[in-house]
Length: 420
Image (tube, rainbow, N blue to C red; front, side):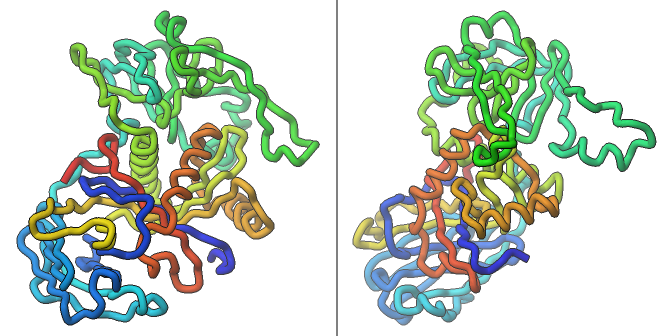
């Protein structure tokens, strides 16, 4: 059980056609549906409707219509998700009752097609040809890579339990698992590849030092990292484990099948790509490992964020208050988006409380470690902080926990699910 005095946040990864403005304040109209629970929560700010008597909720197949005295909005739901007629009920908003109206409603979620994973790590296949691009500038880094083998690497902490399985000394001690030519080894957050001749024209390499754990501890030694970056834009892509082996992080490269002169979508913003890629990875890891706790770490092994996945079956949609965005029945409908919801603890500047939780997670092996470059960790935290306080006030608290909610802009590609 985590201590109640720690500051937490809810981190919502979402995708759809709706736009959630980072400058929006107040509830407006917010909808969250849970497919597994066959229920939903509708939150309407008092600036939209002063009392519940003027609110009417109706629905048709795959749509939900909300009408108030000041405006109307229609939320388009995924195929197979329908609102149960006249099932919305006013419930207490607790401390937020002066600012928001809360309604519980029921839905049916049947005949939902299994969504294809957009997680590129799980999508790679042997005997297929791929191109790797720099996500920052879309320079083609590796051309027409045909992989004869695509193999997953063992769990990140596999070597800590070797002694429990082997009756003889660890045969893997001090040995690295490296790819052969035409191999692609898949880690939790990276690809392991061998170099080819094209790397000389597209990749730069430089030496960097990093603390093994904590720079404040003089007993900790520094280790050298051979950073690999894009020659065109100098964006760090990963590390060189050996002179012939590259580790490229999934957040730094775009991987596309080699089909003619096809180029990946270049208009995707960095924040869109980052949130959707990490969301897909966390969802895939949670499903495959039955784990809900993740420790986002830098290559030095130092925790940066502690994440607790709450649920991954939510469907969300949001419209700001009418004062910011007037919505009538003549306006385009808002498409609901699939989302995963997380609690997080910021460990980038750890105090005593954060240190206690991080130590507890490490000692008890609570969080599965996922490693990203320091800059990516900082980008991820910045996206969260920039979007804080944009969801309804009541969703910033959870029992005794104080929560900051962050709401992400929409992802255009590489998301958990395709467009609804």
